[in-house]
Image 1 (tube, rainbow, N blue to C red):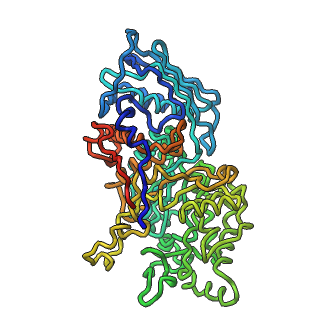
Image 2 (cartoon, rainbow, N blue to C red):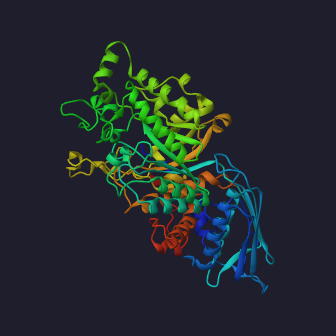
Length: 573
């Protein structure tokens, strides 16, 4: 029997009260936004921002001052806001910061208050420079027009619900120039996202130049013009600091390491072998997609090379978290190695192999004062996993990507902190088909793949799907405290520089708001996706004007006719 999903009152309310497009808004929506009588005041041509001296904050102040003076944003729907009768334009935004020394680490205070009176200077107060940066972004979004004007008679108190709000980008399967990464980090900052998870290496290429092991990139990258030098990394990390965005490196191991074999074939099992041999069953595959190779836990040289890589990466990236991967251990790949075959024939198990690897690497990472992040597989995989006793809870964070709320529940109920990247909701690459060259599933006339786009994680994750996902659903209050936040993820089998912006934005914006201020109206408790539609349309348009190639959500007609593209009829699923 078909189930009926009814549109709740937001759609109907939109038709009567088209509130969101007729006044100026900020994205993500602030926690407290008091503007009882929407008015605006002109911004003086001599407007300035007075802030304490801090290298990263000063760079942000310079950036936002330029933006306020030059953006001249023209909203899609002209705001119904009157200019204040005062002839005194806004001259100054004063910034006060309590703690100038707080580093950009997980859990740093990002709260701020912003007061823009009807006359006189505006004031931005924050505990840290990182909160001040969030407030500067909000202030910039409250400025529009030519000549520039700014919302006045307004008070904002704001702080994130979740401390970890990220975007993961895979730069191994396809390469992205440094400018792409910088643009992505800049867009993240504008959306108050604070963690760039850089999945740098994988089986397909090793683009990171590691000073102590230069052959890994020299032989394992796609070429000298598709590598990230130490200077590139320094530039990216510094850019992140100036935008309030942490840069978390991931060196995935022991799986997803085929590219290491170009420099060190002796430490990689099943490298460069065909991923799913003819005549074999799926369970006997060597990889879950083309691109084979696992580091060999039984070869001492594995750890000689890997520890040098870890040391250099920890030096290049000051971020206190270190992502060590540990996902998708494919039994067939390890079983292809003679030494491992002997280990297994003498009573050893694949899980014991993984335990050997973790016990040989985790203490070294911890010795560098890092907290280790692993994908959930290391604890939850059906076939190859380690016992919880191997993973100290105080030093280990797990990132979930399978089975939605169920795996989140399994992780936190085991006492581990978790980052949510559920593929059913947060994987941005889904729904674009598979990349096998001779895939027979597409030779059909009935369109049977319409439900999943021919993709293992299809269908495409719409911004509404992302916006409505509640990452602590079904958890107790204590369990929810272990949820650090979430990340949308772009795996790059079918993405590169040509589609990067449109794949990420504005869908990552949707997650940005839900993790910053939630997806429900604080007064009614109702989901606010209908009210968010016009605001996100406006924000997407503004992002495009700022140089981010975000994809459109609706025809422009819908934006200029608020509520007319909703429905008051039930959806049938």
